[in-house]
Image (cartoon, rainbow, N blue to C red; front, side, top):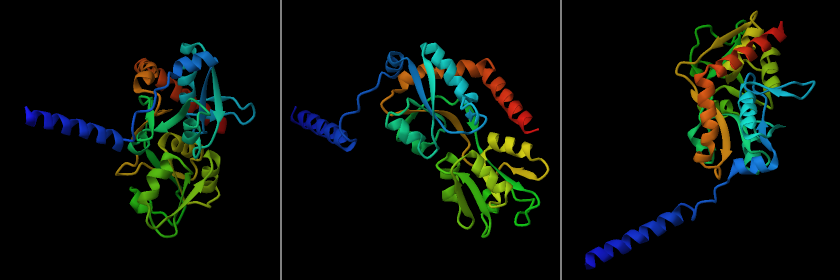
Length: 274
């Protein structure tokens, strides 16, 4: 009996210490959908990343695959969708500060998952590299990021994106040029202020197809950041709460709707460039 009691006390001590080391009691979980329905709007933070999130520069209207998913989910909740324009540097911080409910089109990474919760992936992602095939610094046989990691080569990325966070630790010799947005990163390569654009393979495909006369594309081997693309939530929004959106994503993928939306936006963007 004495040994049993000692074991019980030791076990309770470990539980208490474990709780202290973990930072004390868990945060109270949000009833996000109840709050959204009470407010009458689903507020989302979006930064431009075609074809996932596209902002019309004239009207300010938003579209894209990720926006359409959340527009349909807002209909399920019977609320309005309110898209807040932000940057990739601020999209997560703004969500955590309560400026919007969901962060749009985030890569699912282990590091981010320590600080936020994710939906199921609605699409899949990897980084590709686009460069000018007439650029004398670059050899046509280059296939890996390590091939491009040379002194004198400048690689453009959008600041604060998964591309930035994935590429940066891998680069030892090339220069990384961090640009504020989608357009600036592409213009850097067009104007030859940068030699390579490292970006989402879908966005880079659009960039390359819009500039077929000079562009060349590399899907690096080994792959870089081959991950799911999903929606981000505060830690206080439980995975059980997020399940309602996961079920919609699963349905849209199974019915082929996600593929249809992707094809539609890719065609629209390419047609606009002609």
